[in-house]
Image (tube, rainbow, N blue to C red):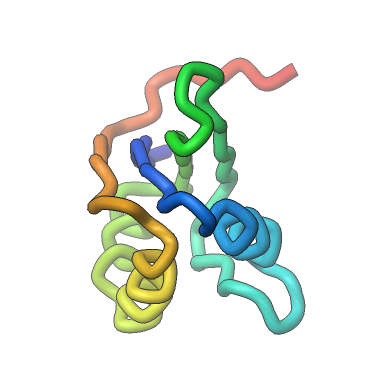
Length: 101
């Protein structure tokens, strides 16, 4: 598997829009769920409530990059950017271990 961890800052007053977007992924009329996506998690920082961490896993590096380079993902990113206070920090890599219980 392959994926990314993104550190994101949500703009003050945009928290609800962010949560609604995240909750809509893969639902009827909501944000699209990319082909090959296996999981996604969003954490809200205890230390800073406007800081979030997105963790996404894809079935392969190829599926991840196909999504990242797709026009649909770019459009979705532009809509996400509206509630962000700054560009996210992306940390891509191979998932070498998973222990889901």
